Amino acid sequence: MDISSSPAIGSPPATTSLARPAPRLIAALALLAALTLVPIATGADSYVVHLLMSVFIFATLGHAWNLMAGFGGMLSFGQQVFIGLAGFSEAILIYYAAAPMAAVWIFAGLVPLAFAMLLVVPMGFKRPVRRSWALGAALCLAVGYEIAVTLRPELDLFGDAFTRRASLLLFLFLGALPLLRLRGAHFAIATWLIAESVATIFNGWPLAGAGGGMQINAGVDVLTLYYLALGLAAAVTLGIFLSMRSTYGLALMAVRDDEEAAESSGIDVMRIKTAIFLISAFVTGLAAGLYFMDAMIITPASGFSISWASYVVFVAVAGGMGTVSGPLIGAVLFVIVDRILGQMSGQGQLVLGLISIALMLFLPQGLAGLLERRGGHRPALTRSPQQPSTSGEAQ
Image (cartoon, rainbow, N blue to C red; front, side, top):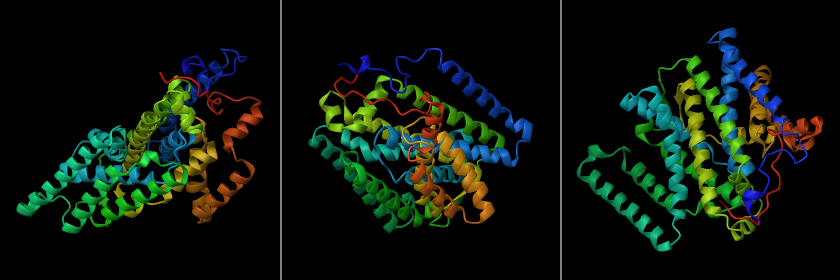
């Protein structure tokens, strides 16, 4: 069976009226319009605006992780590497180049994207000889850089020999690491170790503050950040919603459920996993860029903290893993728990942990699953996609 002839992922059952999505679309547009008016009603620098901006940012971070883990089956505990790289890339570009805000924000997405390409693109080479050539060329560049800084020390961007050599060896190792060949717990542990390794480099890198952190003075007001965060969250939500209703989304779900069956049916598994990994890195970088513009400071401890991994997992799982609306719902819950209940009790991490345990015990499918059961059907934005057929071919 050709995949293109299968029902679109996330589409209503055949017995559902085609007019049914209209009320949901109207409700979504009304909510979006209301959110654009919130700063006018409450004031541009009000506490509500800050809370909603946090919701948008964490919803986008949750979307990026959910795209990999919930829809693609790539369970990652290393999203903090993209978050830290995004924040430090902003700080470095502002401090050393005085770049404008627009360029800084885009750069915050491109640097994690480039790092993700370093992790996965070598695996796109189907012949080991070609991969060896790529690694050989990278080794030659590293040796050439060592020679250059020996002759001209002022060319050294790392500040000291240890940080320079550790960084170059790390990047060479990452370029040879078959990350997307790993699955399940092995992939999760590998992503976490990568994040910890990069954090170690930044802890001693003089260009990035040598562990003391850097300020991020982007010269942007809260109102601009609010609308950028809202627009990013809306665009990512719409993009994932449309993708999961397409042939590509069906192929992605087939890869998640059974890679061998998907590959035997003609789906290019590595190409799909690579694309999802790169998109997730770029989206994570953009969301993290907005977060650190608001925070105005970043340190290795705050940028590469393992807490980021727990936050994005909570947002996606609490809301509903493998659903489009799950990260949106989870982000609202996370901000309520972390920013409101946590501050009131003074034990934000404890409250978050207790709620996580309660959700796992009583709502294993997340809040989206609860809404699904109460509604008596699966709404397009909260239902898990239909089980894909793996007998078709990727288009």
